[in-house]
Amino acid sequence: PEIVKTFESIEKGSGKQLEQFMAEAKSNYDIAIKDLVYRPGESPLELITLETAKKVNQFFSNIKKDVRKRFKNMKLVQILEFPVLFLGAKPSDTPSFYNFMNFADFGLGTWHPKNGMYSVILAMETLAKELGVKIETNANVQKIEVSAGKATGLLVNNKIVIADVILSGADYHHSETLLDKKYRQYSEVYWENKTFAPSSLLFYVGFDKKIENVEHHSLFFDVDFDIHAEAIYDNPKWPEEPLFYASFPSKTDENSAPKGNEAGIFLIPLAPGLEDTNELRELYFEKIITRLEQLTNQSVKNNIIFKESFCVKDFVKEYNSYKGNAYGMANTLLQTAFLRPKLKSKKVQNLYFTGQLTVPGPGVPPSLISGKLVADLIKKYQ
Ligand SMILES: Cc1cc2nc3c(=O)[nH]c(=O)nc-3n(C[C@H](O)[C@H](O)[C@H](O)COP(=O)(O)OP(=O)(O)OC[C@H]3O[C@@H](n4cnc5c(N)ncnc54)[C@H](O)[C@@H]3O)c2cc1C
Image (cartoon, rainbow, N blue to C red; front, side):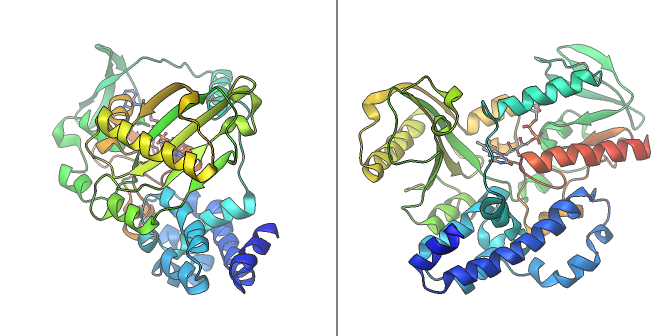
């Protein structure tokens, strides 16, 4: 109700519009999250259900059209168009159906695991160990060994590990490069023609004081969203005036910075595959930190006691991610469900893939669901 009130105060009639928009978004959320994401993308028929049949037009319209039909004020438009950027495509290329992202943001709200995302990983590790999983780290897979169409093992740190079934959760493109060419399903041209989710320039910054006038999550929307989106998707280049997201977890989680200090994470979405140099990173840090100072009315540059950056080159080096993408392959209409790279290899009988480049798509929850889907397929076929 508070968001509805705020909308109404900015544009008359927009409160009611928001309620209608969210009702629609909730209904899509229920269909998508409770049902569709749990389908393994083996066949187009999986998508045809009583519910989706009623909503078929929503796969052929897009978020931009829908939002702008209801709202005129550009601030409101941007707030509603922004969440889908994380699905990896422009609002004009994202089917209306995906407005469930708005419901996730506005309806369900935002949740923060105590001590940050890494505590989720630690919890998963504990669960896996309880179930008897043996985890090996610092184990770079160099090759997937195949004999007569059947995977036999992995080359890891120059040693062969024998396997009955192989499941790769690494970047799909990279995983296929670990195979001899004849066993790869998708060509370089195939990947080249796909729309990838953005990469990012990230800064992890420690301040020796509290930062004022910001929230745990702050989006800096003071420049044109469309121009930045064009620089990501249409004409890949460094955006002149970037939008950026800033997170100050120490606003709500006291464990994320010493008392009286603040932890800040800054993210600029970028096209994958861009040139990435220290000079460019610094130039962009200067741009955003100056804007932060101006817009929040304080000086912070002299209070930085720690700073690290992460960008395209690091995504390639640390994750082997295709062109340094940060969250996989976009969910455009032609890259949805059965049209995405498959969970089960068509060329190697006991080889499977999971994660953000396959079904259902980018993001932590979809990647986890992808793991469940592939586990079911392995049970079905092996
Ligand atoms: C800055 C940023 C912000 C994000 N924010 C959100 C958000 O708010 N909400 C959300 O839902 N999602 C968010 N995401 C996206 C989300 O993190 C990803 O979609 C998700 O983690 C992908 O999971 P995955 O299992 O497919 O891949 P990953 O988590 O990348 O796992 C793949 C693993 O494979 C390893 N690997 C690669 N090659 C090899 C090899 N040869 N041998 C051995 N191991 C290898 C990698 O090191 C990596 O550990 C964000 C991503 C980024 C980068």
